[in-house]
Length: 529
Image 1 (cartoon, helix red, strand yellow):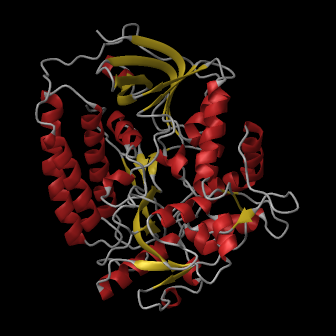
Image 2 (cartoon, rainbow, N blue to C red; image 1 turned 90 degrees about the horizontal axis):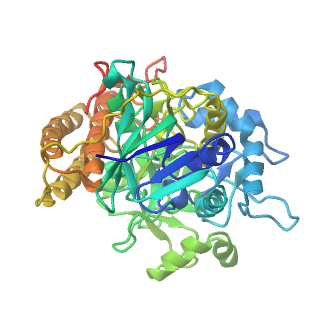
Image 3 (cartoon, one colour; image 1 turned 90 degrees about the vertical axis):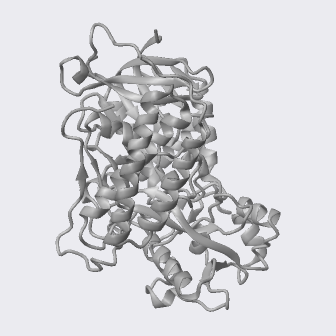
């Protein structure tokens, strides 16, 4: 029989949104944070750019709002944009109060960087490893709080629903697998908070860490929560192209500081696609690079920083400089080879301004949430801001939430499942999904490509479902199950959008519809295993 753990708040994920929520909620209740691997294995930790906020005298809330709406291609929720933008300075101050170090200029003022599609310098940062610094400070603060428990090496298997006990689909916790022991615990909570990050590992080429398998979206959908705008997957235009680079991101801040995209011939090309040239928004730059690569047959394009002062480049981007140098690329003397890769999910689990989903007791914050801030294309460095704003609102909203749970909770049961001796099935299915998603539901889509993807994912989901029922679960199998469902949801959402807007570009519907609309997808016949 599985262990039953009682807490006030269960947080699934340990990035900026989850940890900030935990710190605030711990002032009025007990918090358990579960994280799949080490607490620092998050998208936050990999974020290079920074936090966008209006802090300069030549900037304004109106301008930040306008830049966000323009990047979002008509699909942002203006009310949400205004909420996040106006709270930006307060959230930057909170980060400083927590102990986050941020770069300052010679006068001691916060140094403000500029990134693609921003018309002002407004991105606070710490060198080129801002996310790592935020993660460090948040984990240090969490470690000191007596009301917070972090369980690393734990992965949520499924959310607990009152519907299985004759009630509505209200959530009261989750089944949680300890990956080290194979034991499944039942964690009951007044509020369950999804802070699971992104879905980048659905694609073979991604800037995301291995943990980004869309677990929050998959679990919420199975519970019956509404999800939205899942077709809008942001492909970062510039990930380092090198056989030993892994998923190393070349920050958009390089283009913000004057970096220029070029072909192997040395020619520039972005002027053919947008007036802002290399500083155009990510959707435009990624499609432009994809188009140039397909025309030329080349493997990559290049980001040229060699015209800038070498001392400035080394000082502003020390981590990127050292990493490139370790691979034989001196970015002060030679252009950096780059390609696009899956980077950010603009949609997710649908929430209100307090992070509440359509299921009572379930909240979603950070990248796994669909708030309406990003629209059809995220403006650079708005994501860390979103994580701070909505985790703050969610922590306030759950303060007086009543406890909902059945008198007796059914323990996790393996039934007749046995240990698997055929783990190769998991890795092969994982690899196949990621490859056909890249080929058929990537930067440029078509009805034919998406139909191929739909047929493949249905076959694979049947295979995975059978495997899941027959064998005892492992963390790899849990992730594969979620990955397959998220791939299915992205495909279905993309097939339903009969236009090209923002990050969703389809050859069959190249024009934008006159009226913008969000997509929504929901399991309407009740929670499903």
